[in-house]
Image (cartoon, rainbow, N blue to C red; front, side, top):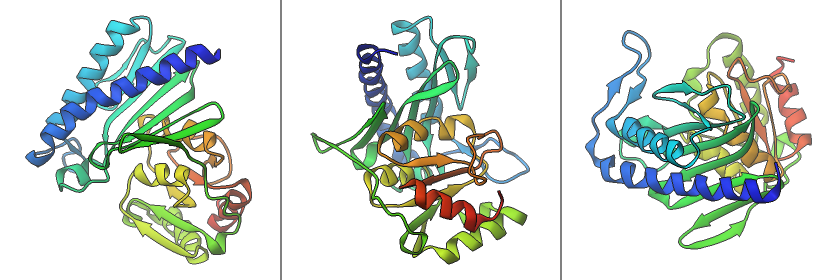
Length: 263
């Protein structure tokens, strides 16, 4: 894709994020949520999730009717298209329902099935992270600056994050315990915001599992544009099992894969 075209799509992704902010910020204090996974682990969805995704779909259909859309709430349309927008209107719905500020909106553009542009917006924090090609940027408080990963190359010095260690079971729980034991410190509860902060250099390593395409598609181009490395827990680029390992540097990634011990 040429530079002008990707720049056009990046500006449109920012426009989509602004549209979502108008829906989500107005609804955050509501607190009401339905359970999408009745009988299993609580998986909340709110009216704001659905309203925000509808708004994005409508604008995409208006501006780029030939593009496909793959959204968390309403599934895949025109999946055969060269360009498919992958949408997660509220990543971190539990935080959203609890009135915590770390929830985000995830927007990715897939070209022929590969994520080429990634946006992570944290509306309550007024932080928008955008990455494509070899450039990653943060917009905050009306200002914009380039961002890059920390450069951390040693697991013993790494700041590790995952959303919830109790989501791991069996071999994954044992693997994460090994990783946590080797890292310098570990913080929990940030959902996709942890990956944004990895791109900005304040977290060095994130390990999660059980993710779907709409959860990880925006993260890959953002982190890679910021200089980081992303793969699965075996060090591969197959994300079909939902495992994501993101690191500030290739050296840190390799050490994390070795610590996980699943290769």
